[in-house]
Image 1 (cartoon, rainbow, N blue to C red):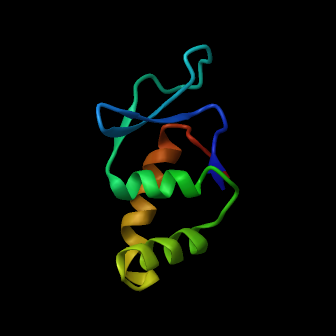
Image 2: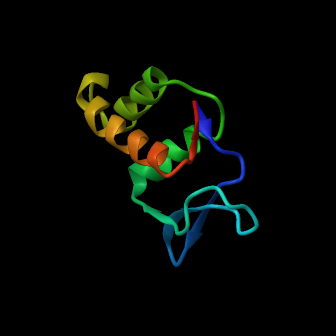
Length: 88
């Protein structure tokens, strides 16, 4: 899975945001403000990856076990998917 190529990850006034391209109608109007964890995951999603790799990277980043971050990761991935931001 990965983020759809056209989505833009930027810093705006010190906050990371994920926005759709202005010239495409992709079913989502707005932006998602990301915390550090969301930004970290979105950076990993810039290239094809899978859930297990994401969970392992998050666990390493936060000193946890992959099982400990799995539920929150799934919620975040489902949110991105519901906004049509992921290619599976």
